[in-house]
Image 1 (cartoon, rainbow, N blue to C red):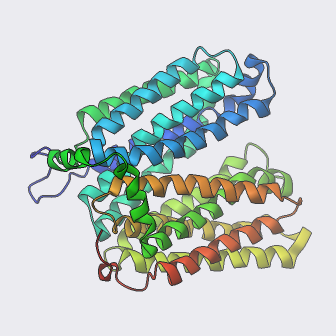
Image 2 (cartoon, rainbow, N blue to C red):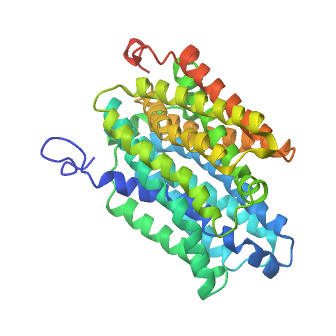
Length: 414
């Protein structure tokens, strides 16, 4: 780490959190900005819309792969080098997408683009763990997550605006420029938080050690409790995201113009609770806030299901929205504290640990969200029931596996 990086009190500068948030925002921008352009892309490529939508799934898969491989490599080779490689892949793939003329190539290039994005963004959580611990780590995670909420909200607006001035290529030109700006950020501003000594020692280790560290994580039951608990919470959120168009526009008749308002109300709830979390961390430990958040999530999902079963076809939008906003808001105090508690177990392999954490959220969230979407019955019952199952299982993980009521310090450090 550069000696002039820390301030007079030996603390990282305040601008680090927004810089890391900007880098993490690469993925929501890459996914959400081009969603309004999918029909136009399908027409240009001469295929059905569903074929182009495969590029969304390929991006999610590629992002998980990029994180799984990029995390351990960043522990071995350094955060900045892996971030640079990832952004180079992202930029090159984005440039090639501008010249693609068939859907199959688009899907493949989106996968490559996502691998690069996974490499680039996995270093963010690792840098936080390298520089911060305990409450400070949870506080920075909350700040990053709060700023990260801006990206999914503004990305579709950016995409639609760019479409009004040109075709879908304009969106990928925007992503190309954003990727170049992030390259400047990584190469010129972010610090290398893995010392030369630590990198040299890692590089002398056998290459099998690179992924043996994953075995170390799976031998830590308490850490897995935090990991799988958050994965289930992610599943609860993905169920909401994947079913939102049906719920709002088909079931409750919300217009497409008002849909972003309904969808964004839950995002606003998340943002408010994340700000509250920063203040709660001045008084409580992350694990204590985590338990309170998971309890709140479970109660909210139970209210959602009870309301759905009680009112049936007569359920109003307000009766659905009140517990839903409460449920999504509670994730604002769960997610940053889950990450901080989980990463606390692995100070020496934080890149590997963060990679598994990030990949598990996308994989489990996508699978659980897709499962509920697949058993869709045309009513709200499977949605509410699925969210309650995820929330209840997450709370059980936190209480009985992670043992979040006990201080983390009693566990042996890895």
